[in-house]
Structure formats: C-alpha cells, structure tokens
Amino acid sequence: METRRDAAKKETRSALIRAALELFHQEGFDGPSLDAICARAGYTRGAFYVHFKDREDLVAATMADTLERIVGRVIDADSESEASLLKTVMSYVESTLTPQATRAQGEGPRFHQFLEACHRSPRVREVFQETIGKVLSPVGQLVDSGQAQGGIRKDIPSQDMAGVLILMAMGALVAVDVGLEMKLEETRDAALQLLQAP
Image (cartoon, rainbow, N blue to C red; front, side, top):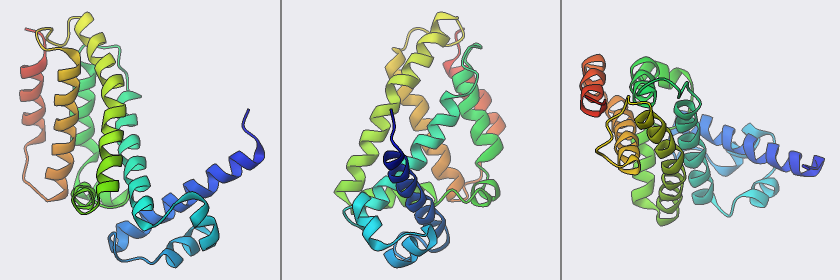
C-alpha cells in the first residue's frame, strides 16, 4: 500500500517533470536552468536531486513520460474492433498531431528534439530504447487480438507488426513536427490496406 510519503515523492517527481516539459516546450532542452524548472514546479534544487542525478536524467525522464503518454492513448483506445489498433494510430495522428494541436497541448518538446537528445546523450538514448521496448509487448498483444478477430493480416508475426506500427507512429510524429506536407487520410487508408487482412 502506498504511504503518504511515497505519494508525496511521486507528486514531487511528477511536478518536476511537468514543469520541465512546459519550459522545454517554450525554450528547448538547453534553455531553462534547473533553478527555473524547480521554481516552476514549486520545489527546491534539493528536491530535484532526490529524484534526478542531473539535467540529462531529467531529459530522459521527460522523454519516457511523453512516449508513455502517447502510446497509452493508443493502447487505452477501443482495442476490440477489427484492426482498431492501426485505425487508432492513424486517427490519433490525423486528429491530434497537427502542429497547432500538439503545441496547444503544451506536451513538451517536439518529437524530433527528443531524437536529437538521443543523439547527444547515451543515457537519454538508453531510456528511449527501454521505453520503446516496454511498449512493444502490449502493442503486440493488441495485434494478436486483431489477428485473431480477422481484422489484421496473419502472415506477419504480431511483434513484427507491432514494430511497424510503432515506427509508423514515430515517423508521423517527426513528419508533423517538421511540417512535412502529408495527406493523412490517404496515408491512413494506404496503411490500412497494407496491414488489414485480405
């Protein structure tokens, strides 16, 4: 059972991550000082160092938080209907990952900035890989369900299909972030045709 102290520690960590995401959104990863992040969260630097070793550790935590929330939206959607996982991925991209919607939600840095952070930091890259690894299994289980219902083609192993879906979602995030002109509806339909059972 979670104690009050545990709950308070969890809330402190969450507040620091939220504050970092807000400031990273406004100023990029290198802009805000740790003091500014702590002040935004309402905590001291001492509280910061209880939860994070350094700035790099905080960047890794914000990236894991962002990725888990994005994937959570997909996994929490209705997964019982045929090919619903693919439809949900593409609908999510189509409906919410416009530059205006993403920035209005204040969800932190653009996805390509996280990739740049991975390039700069082995620790951030390691957390990125761990986070993607964690979501492969539940996405694979949803693919299994779609294959069992006959909505998703069965000639591709579910874990391979899960990898394709995750790569599609990441690619769509980057494309939208950099302003690539995409016909999302047509892209969604083409992807459905490729992955749906004949």
